Length: 260
Image (cartoon, rainbow, N blue to C red; front, side, top):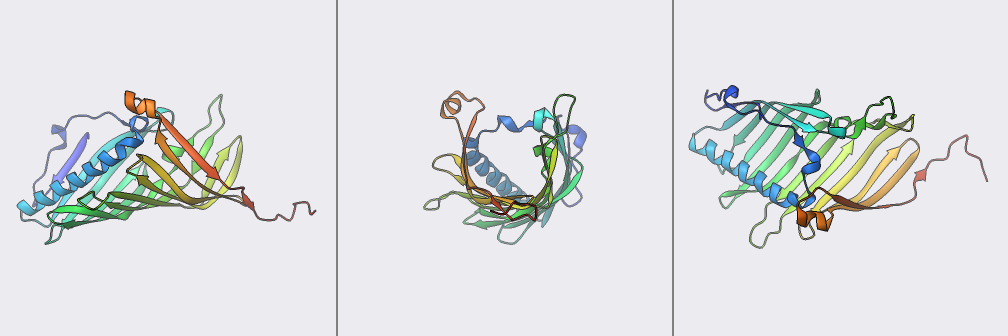
């Protein structure tokens, strides 16, 4: 976190006091770490809620937060959080609203964090305008043709915290906007598509629920799963395995298609 400003009743944290951080390497994140990561998120929101409560304020704003991710082929993707507001209600629940940019493209975050029995228990909201090309597109080079998706997407987020007699849940529903898909020197029209996933906390894997990709005149329904390779998990290495089940593409009849 190279830059950060925390505002609460006029208090400001000098960003120059914070250490410089390295880009976050997405390939180093294991699927099995999702469960622990979700609990960390709930703990952090709990801490912010308690901070606001002790300071007798309603809102804390985090501003000018800059970080980066290592994307495709270790390409550095900058993320700038312009503002991130935590507004606390009387019962300790919070509304979280943020404005940020990823690789120069503006996005927003809107989350509701509900509190019960003295702690945050659920998250419900969405991230809007996420640029897929920042992570899913590779420009052409002297030896390779361009490949990937040029589009943006909205992501709905629902999560439940683990508690006694309450299993944790995490569900993400993504919907992409119209864009383009480049592969092999050809560009196809990418129409609005859906990706629905949930996390299996028992098997430590991502379940791809019935989803749909629309490319040109074709529609590709699919389901599947993504998990760490078991030996790699034990050794603490980076490795994934994926299992996808795709139905034959559904194509609209073209006026140039030969009739049988």
